[in-house]
Length: 530
Image (cartoon, rainbow, N blue to C red):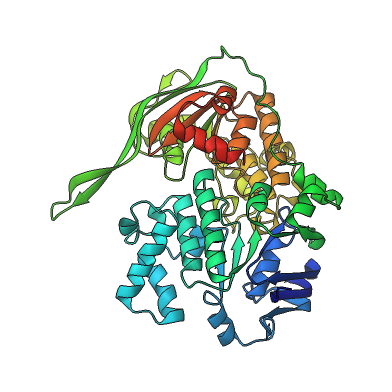
């Protein structure tokens, strides 16, 4: 019988607040054997990340309270060992991939330096050898132009590229245990498949164990040996992967398995007037060099993209990380400089400056991928939702409060919680706050940039249903950016496939997914159906 490298017994964790301690996990018991992968699944707020962070004592010292239980790693008592010993464990014997790469990478340091620093701290690796190993790992995790990326800062990388850097950083010291907290959330299906294959390959090579936290059950099917299901801070079911999927025992597990994106896009008028007409959109970023800083070359982020988005319709943009999806969205909203023709509701906005665009801003809204970083943690929900109202509307305090409450009710949030702060809400609730902020100005168009990628399947399904009902009720037009083709199939009427900034295939979503013509599209569709 395999020996457990990590054992958690009856772990209960709470957080101190003004009224006492709020307990968030209750008697959690898990064991991870050497060389195996245990997938920890459950909805937002179920206690998955709290359990994972407790292993390395990464919970806030000022508020976290360990109310009971033990965490033993290879006969080391993790809750009682010294901080010095914990520092030796973190990043060396135990690696961790966090869900939010932008919050985990130092924005002031280049990628190469951050990778080399990990090797220097734990292995004492000299600079030249460390740089070589850093380059090798960037290649392993599928970073394009890895030599250039070593000299890049985190903000110069796409979301998916930053996540890949985090994976490289966690694995570069070849740990015995890898704690992966939603490590493939920001990755498209093709890179996701590469990363999962890489993790399995490394696991076989090193006998590495993995605690893999995810809301994506298709990933669990591919990578897990055993599955533990959490709900409201408690473990409700633990079993082998085959038993959990083929013979689930708990009603919540059954609900999770049946919560994959389903349904069709909302019915629409196929002859509706265009909301956006985009022709030959181009976004090239100049690369300057020399004493005179002359333009030497360009980063061709988007090249000659054209499409029409009709009123009340949804257009999906799919493709790998760095393919130009988000850049296209930002460009049509005039948040990035671009060339080409952009027509909004019959008006050419291509050449409008910032001041001239202001009257249109209330009609054009955005919901971003990461609700935590998109919401100001120092502002209450009411303040966040009312930001646009203060710019575009003139309302009395009473009128403003009513509009805020109405917007929250429309996205199925309790208006009584409007004076709370973002950290008091789950990931799914924070995304509803972001949607309420967009809705409050009664827009005609919303850019949805990966709005469900960080959500577990049950919450994702709820948010998709919400987006569909809002679209039908208000006649909204969506430009939906995603790497999850199943979500796109459920919401979008028309889809464009982007690769390296260019459209490789486009068409009605149902036809595109059942009869893809291009090899790249065929690959994406095949991987999404695994």
